[in-house]
Length: 251
Image 1 (tube, rainbow, N blue to C red):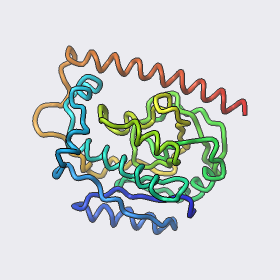
Image 2: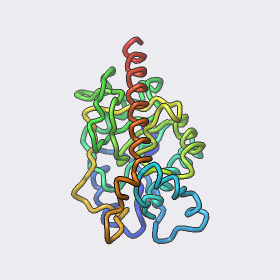
Image 3: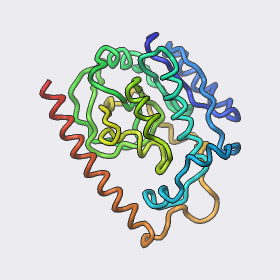
């Protein structure tokens, strides 16, 4: 797996989380490097300027969190590090992911078919309504998603996708996991492995942090633009998914 670089995104103030994922990666035999996460408590003016707050409110219907920006910029940094390396792809992990024993086999299977994907989600919060088309490991298939599949705790990305993300992700107008899977926007083959070899751990407290006080969501009358955006986005997702599924199954 020398052609795959593994990055674990981890805040300096979260050493226990790093120890937890380090033990999991040691168990499955994957070498890795730590990527210091951008800390929302110490954002520079230049980093703060990468947030389009008005666009976020319009598209997401709530107030942005500094922690979301820190997370977003940390993933962009992972893309930049891949491009600066000689690796063909990067496995990007958030430090609260649950790593399954089948992950190495899935990675080997994906790297054996590099022409069939640009970014592959290896964990999921929602089902994604997967349309499968290729076996990549025993019990695991590569699939196109027809519905929303949020979460960014584990994914594989190649150099083509990394360049597209570096060129097109900023400024931030949505949480990272709401935008990086938009294959139609970036011109990428966005996929998932089902069942996923990694799991999002919803039992571990997020380091993004929710603001105290009232709900971040605006009153429904002030969320009309967000609802319109989401409807259009999901229609584009279905159209993209159907097109990509037909293309893959005709190969």
